[in-house]
Length: 118
Image 1 (cartoon, rainbow, N blue to C red):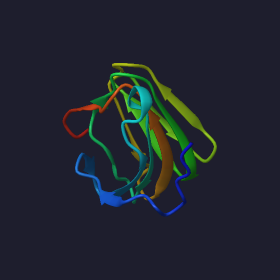
Image 2 (image 1 turned 30 degrees about the vertical axis):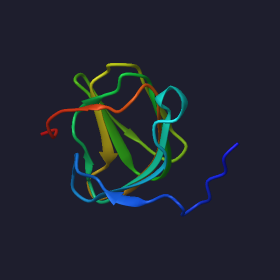
Image 3 (image 1 turned 180 degrees about the horizontal axis):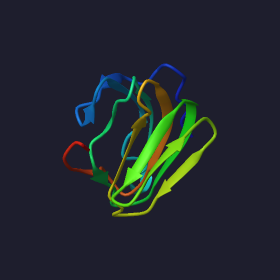
Image 4 (image 1 turned 45 degrees about the vertical axis):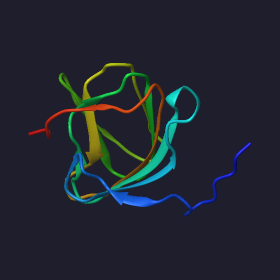
């Protein structure tokens, strides 16, 4: 068993994001490549396009966000859960004029990053 205390994760600035984004990586590459991060998106910032080799689950903690695929963009808010299947190309972040914080849980290893969304 491992207990990781709130605030004990290193905070880093995201490099595959548009705008200001910080990450707190609580677990990185555990059993089966399971990772858990808390990600803070400032005013309209969002990830670049990416896909995961395994699933990704996002749990929105606060703020207004948006998630997108090649076919759609959806606004999300506190308590919403987003499931992305293996290999599904997508992006996520804060809505314009808003901030958003989510928990990200992934498995299967790190994502493959693409270009910033337009």
